[in-house]
Length: 439
Image (cartoon, rainbow, N blue to C red):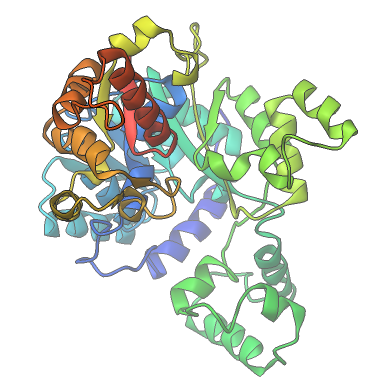
């Protein structure tokens, strides 16, 4: 493992001691943002990477580069019963993180002032590691990955991200300007921030960099300028570079965190009627190749955000599209934890009372597929799942209780027909990320 450059680390430390990131008030949280908790819920990662449904109680989670603790708080809220451990090189940030979690009553958490490369000193092995908005600041990305791999349990999952060379290109250009002008030779502080602000405010609105960095549309705070235009150590990376880092660190790629944004076929108007060249080429291409093409064609993602882990001897279990009848008959259904809220239950009960369709997608905005669920299906599935996981068989029996008669014939609905209907509903809701299914 390479030894980190002390001078470089000191510059990064001074930057975040000066302005702990994110500088969000201690009382704020992600509690009202289920889409953010969804990403930080390790159940989500294990389900889409390994087809496993895991309980979070008793698990050990590392927030590597925890900053001021906002993501550590999200990890605590998204993973009830888990212990959260945070490390960061900025002592000011660590103190902020401690105060934040104490304010929110999170007792099972601890924080350490420690470089990411030295986390073996903790003497812990983690079920899940979150390294969010950190790795691109390290001088050696493979060294950082090796450090995290060394404390990741054999079946654990590591989430990390790097700035995209293409999706982040405008901010990287802005940094080059202010590097050229000498504003990043030391540790940027208030004077440098004001120079950046004055520069863009004085420019015509048609100046391309001002337009493409959305200067007039975003909240241009001191924190935003330091985290973007004056971010010391920032770098952009490509998909092939990320895969090479994984190979060197002996880690296996599992999935992009926002996998729906990385579907090569979604770039085409008619995925079932591709031009001949692409119809022949895409099925033969590797996943790495497909992700590379997406990044080049449509660099909409600021981050290359992935789940990975130790190479697995056994592949992940099959998706439900490949399940047998026996798999379905013995399956158990789990509600996405971020849906188990008072607001979700209240709206569900209101819809059931007046037999209105239930718009489940409004409770997981920006994550799931738009879904409007028939009232009887909603009553069959969601009410019991709010209480505890349910066998598929029990849900089919509940459907027969709520809808026992075929409306066209007035004959009792056979179990096989009820099972097929419930199976179809579960398949659609699982695809939308609203349910987990375990064999």
